[in-house]
Amino acid sequence: MSKEWPLWEIFIRGQHGLSHRHVGSLHAPDAEMAIKNARDVYTRRNEGVSIWVVEANNIAASSPSEKGPLYEPSESKIYRHPTFFDIPDEIGHM
Amino acid sequence: MYAQMVKSEATQDDPEKLAAFQEKIDANIKVEPRDWMPEGYRKTLIRQIGQHAHSEIVGQLPEGNWITRAPTLERKMILLAKVQDEAGHGLYLYAAAETLGVSRDELTEMLLDGRMKYSSIFNYPTLNWADIGAVGWLVDGAAIMNQVPLQRTSYGPYSRAMIRICKEESFHQRQGYDIMMKMAQGTEAQKKMAQDALNRLWYPSLMMFGPSDAASVHSEQSMGWKIKINSNDELRQKFVDQTVPQAKYLGLTIPDDNLTWNEDKGGWDYSDPDWTEFFDVLKGNGPCNTDRMEARNKAWDDGAWVRDGLLAHAEKKRAAKTAAE
Image (cartoon, rainbow over all chains, first blue to last red; front, side):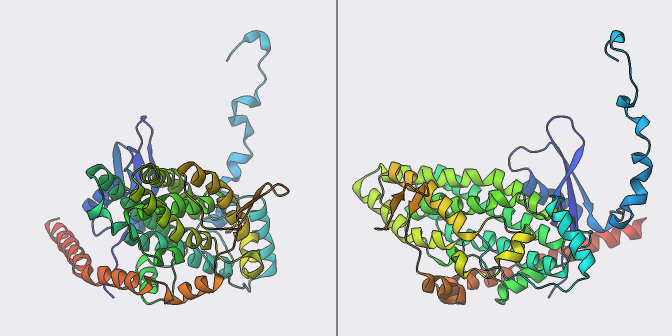
């Protein structure tokens, strides 16, 4: 069996000025082919105006087992949300 | 259904972890690739998603058969776009299976040496142009029936692939029905071709949902894990109920003398397909099994130099770039 082409993660910017968003992955020998293949696979129906490709083994990710400790600080600081503060009705919209 | 008779794997994991996993599934929390999962869940999913992906790829063959013979340039371009979609669907699914720790090439090799299966439906030939209509209408119709609920499946990457596929699949069924309408409203000869296509593809389409619930041995665990959402007979019934009025509109007759409206269940009573034939086709004895596997093997072997060549070129370019830095 010959060597397998590396895996690329594909990110696409949609039409409406949003950030690039992960849409899926594909195999390609190099970045240029990955972009060409991504065009064929992920933008057949006008889904995007810009493509990023990143080789999958270059992505570092947080570990699922650390979920608790990693996100605990944000859960305990509810005052970061505007709804934490009561503003009197007569003040109007704030 | 593109995945039939998927054997579910027994699992021998820590009971506490299993219980926590089941709780998560019951609460509709998606399982993601790096989360803990039972070995049986992983293996069953690889088999199911793999079989589904292989079906998308092998499914290009009976339709590809008509690209060069489509009756008009417009029909040809539409069919080409549809077959290209199927390649994309196969790719989304292979990518989902890869997140479970199997490589793309391993999956391909398992298809090519017969360790993995694809849907029985693609072992039937497409003999006339109306077959392309009937495939879109019936085969894609049956696939949608199965894929829509699978958008809610518990495994995140599989669910996301299904959502993408369902968005594109409706075009496939409509283009098929459009061909059927044209044929059914055409000359006597065209109408005969349409009826002939329906006659040959009706029962193989019913087989797509897999054996009857009574004979379906692998469902319970898969349903518990939400990698199967409805039973085979439930989906088959829905498919028949949806298709009968569509056939009537075309003025075509579904080849089943027992087809009668059942007021009590609010659905049609219909004849089961010949299950002996179904199991025989799965074993490799359908009309086109040999052709399909030969075509896939040939494509894989003939393409080897392209895969190797492009990789060698990419490595050479990378080496040159490193040397220049």
